Amino acid sequence: MPELPEVETIVRDLKLVQEKTFSAIKVQDPFVLRQPASDFIHALKKQRIKKILRRGKAIVVELSSGKFLVIQVMMTGQLVINAHPDKHTRIIFSFSDGSSLLYNDQRRFGQLRVVKDLGEINYFNILGHEPFSKEFTPEYLYEVCQRSQRPIKNFLLDHTVVAGIGNIYACEILFRSGVSPKRPVSKIKKAETLIIHQQIKAVLDEAIKYRGSSMRNYRDGAGQKGKFNQLLSVYAKEGELCQQCHEPIVRMVQAGRSTFYCQRCQK
DNA sequence: AGGTCGACCTGGCAGC
DNA sequence: TGCTGCCAGGTCGACC
Image (cartoon, rainbow, N blue to C red; front, top):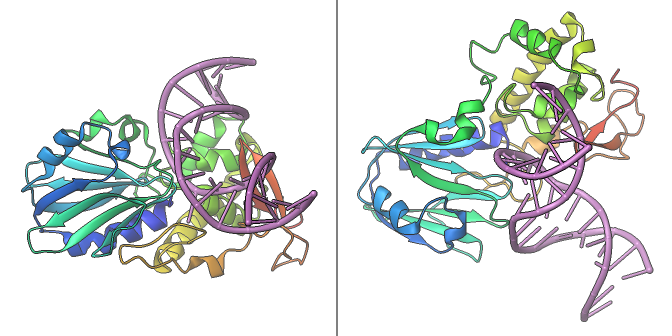
């Protein structure tokens, strides 16, 4: 899905629908719901949106009933305000003031549901620290690294370790840190975890400022693409020359997913 | 028990 | 043009 910066951008854009009240919900494709459509509609109708926040890569909409609408957009989900429905529109939310919000999802991996308690969704129970929380310290990162032999790339993708980092930003963070994606985390020195910790925050923060990266499907709440692509150094740049040493960027597969890196700059 | 892999879906693109 | 195979931002459960 959209990773942390993209979901954060969507959540910020959704401030526009805060305080609005759902008047109608049209389920075009119940496949994306994790409960019967009638339950979903019933739980939302006439509810006012109190607050919208992000946890990991999930969007949490707090309703006036005290329940939560949870949206995981996964790879291709979009939430777009006041747009025209198309063939990928799965849910149409209408508000009492005449405005609307569409949930579009090409691949239908996304999931929506209304719950009383976030603990009903296991994702929230196992999620690690948020990168921008005070709990996410260099000491924490170093300590969890000691307990594993996995390559650092796979480790950064593990949302039970740290929430919100996906394939694009894991690659970029490691490039900026000068650390090879293959390095077993237990072999990473304390000074290096300090740099990686710093780069996690720096890369994600910068990507949020640029409203995320749009490789293919990602769009913000207004239906616009993110602009961080132009600042990517390695992701999807196989064969292009490293901006630092001019060696070609290499692609390899780790845990079934593409990793892009510079063999000379990342040790 | 930690870690990896395939499945879940649809569609775009490269190569033949 | 049309087919095949590969690839894609995530997550979970099965399996080693």
